[in-house]
Amino acid sequence: MSDDKQPLARIPLAGVIGSPIAHSKSPQLHGHWLKTNGIAGHYIPMDVSADNLADVLQTLPKMGFVGVNITVPHKERALALADLVTDRATLIGAANTLIFRKDGKLHADNTDGYGFIQNLRQNAPTWQPELGPAAVLGAGGAARAVVASLLDVGVPEIFISNRTRIRAEALQSEFGKRLTVVDWVQAGNMMEEATTVVNTTSLGMLGKPPLRVPLDGLRRGALVTDLVYAPLKTQFLIEAEKMGCVTVDGLGMLLHQAVPAFERWFGVRPNVDSAARAAVLR
Image 1 (spheres, one colour):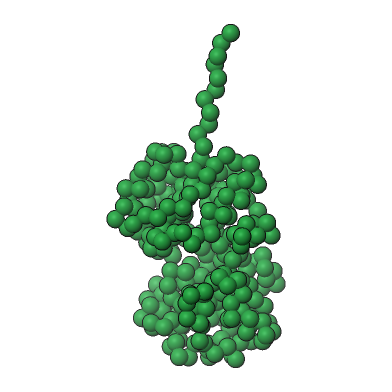
Image 2 (cartoon, rainbow, N blue to C red):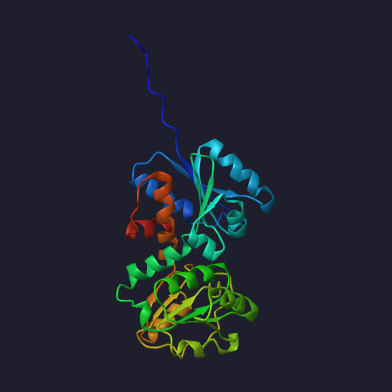
């Protein structure tokens, strides 16, 4: 009697690389999806220094990793290390998702803008981006993804304001004439015309200073969203709600940006539903 047992399939591994990384909610989310889809894989948080990033990315595929998410402060460096880069990652200038291909090449993508738009589509289904200008607070890495995705879905004009004006001007020089830079002290005024208003700064997050921008110019019925999701309902969203705006919290962006990565790594498209939200909030 022969004993020709088939070798066990290699368990697929993925994870998230940043520094620090202990705060990341991604392991809870991907762990939930792995379990609900019956996939024998693991998703691991990894605190990696900038000096070690290149070596780590070369080593992980040899250990059974199929890909990783990349977060602060490595998003730009990861893009530079990649062999293949998607158009949207090139446009945003940063990578949040890496795929380790079977041919040994490192494929970089950025799904932040996708996650941002899908969150709005799911939680504000009547939103019509083409109806008026958008007002964006902040000009960091998250703002780049937001600006690129808003222009892509047809927002006619974007007013952008940042505490350091030169960073907003850098975005304007890259994205062109549809962007208008507004001084931070005038940030409240740019909301008067806006049908979409986005806070991409960390102001209002737990442990950070509050967002001190006057909101009395908000239009009733405007869509207002905050990328901050701790707390889930920021003071910015509470005030906007009082003024009759449609509000969307930032947690959905985290959930939706993870979908394309999970699908590429594990071969199943996961659901963004109440169970996924609950898994992350636990």
